[in-house]
Amino acid sequence: MFNNFSRTVRMKQNKRIFKYSALVSDAGDSSQQNVYADLPAGANAAGFMGFLNDQHFIEPGGLYFVPQGTPPETVTGTVPSTYSLAGRNATIVTAGDHFAIAAAAGINEGDLLVIADSYGRLNSIVGAGIQAGTTANVVAKALTPSAEADDIIRIKVIDMPVKQ
Image (tube, rainbow, N blue to C red):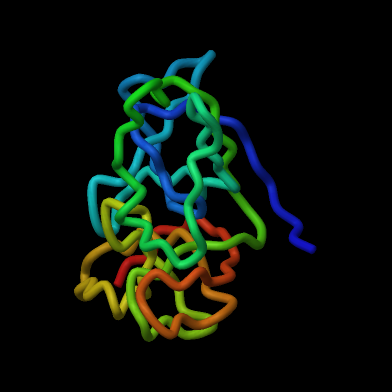
């Protein structure tokens, strides 16, 4: 059983987002009443908020089904044709044990992880190529390794900038 902390945020854009994707703050639209989250702009993004919890998309006619093994990049960023996700609530995990999507093979147990791309996948600091003197915006520690890109790995959620 996982012991984690979660919170509800509003989604910034009308886009589907694969479950377990890392999300960042959208400070421009957030207020005291509403906190908005969005996909990261790219690698090593700052403003980490949490990981999307199990997210199911309900569309007219039923559930938007994503078969196991579907690459996240085929879902994340697609726009629903019959309704809008903008402003809808989503639950994110902000601390504790959870799952995330590996951007590459070679993540080892114990690696510190950063956001790897605009899909909210993760990579190790070394795998992401973060250079000495750069701040790594660490969002998690790997609890299980990745064998290939798009593996679902167990993580410990942390938010800790680390100077390389």
